[in-house]
Length: 152
Image (cartoon, rainbow, N blue to C red; front, side):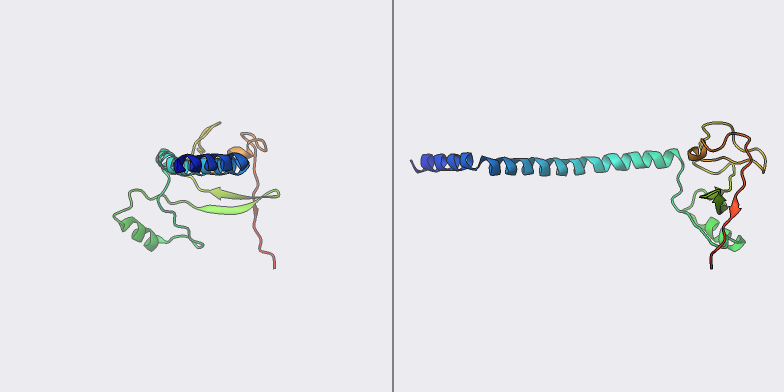
């Protein structure tokens, strides 16, 4: 008899406060979906990242120097047994009109270069430009990059 009365009281209280009960059920549902989503997206994101890193031969380590690397630095890097490939490149920052632009050197060993239009540079006066600049320039245009000057 006591169980029946207790159950009736509980159901009546839930009916009287159905807004609170509904809110609690919604919060439990949302918390459950967030936890399930977090557990499922982690492995999927790691798999996608690893596929992309392998596809574009992304480096494990990038060494940048303000004054460049000399021969001794290169020998130290190349002696490391854990390094499979070493790519050396140079870059230069300058202005292209009002925009700051970075020019990077290119070699046949340079990873991650995908040409969507035209061909790889064959001469020293040819460059590859980013897809974002495609609307500003066409193949064969001459581009002038101005030096960065420090303001005092």
